[in-house]
Picture: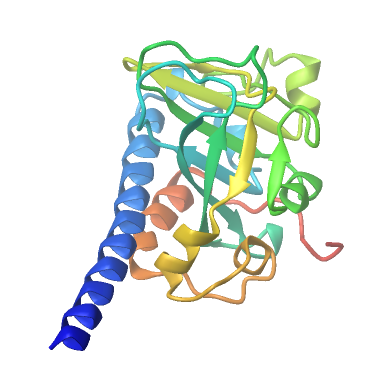
Length: 230
């Protein structure tokens, strides 16, 4: 009887963990749809269409984004081979990397686009400091990237935030992105590295990720650069 109860507990635990990952995917899909539904205040289409990867952190925690504290859990999706259809998602956490990077008391959604293969290759490492390991800057907002600064056009990552419905470019300089191996294990049912999901493409997207892939395809149907050199 004790063994049966233990087995039932483990099954329930893994089921709840997988459901949490699926919920995060649903939240990410909703955030992206809501942001891109207002094209005059969204991510410029000409930049989004060339994105190699897209990261989304739905708001989870209200309060200061402090040193050593975790801001939230996110979803990262890359194109197959860098220029194909959108692939399977990988989970990550985004946390503070310096005392200077703080978010005030409002819940904030974060979205960023990765613009080249070098950025994608760096992001699949276990831990990445944005602004250090990767060039990142606040992205331009609007229907097109016309008027974007030189820094924005050359950055590997363009980042955005939404607080109280207001969407704007936001610098993630100093933040630390870490791969969430536990969430990926729960989502895929086994241990799997972010590179295997995002670069090698050895796993299929789970059913819960289909709406997010469809949304990404709707707003960014074209491909970026190939991962052939990775």
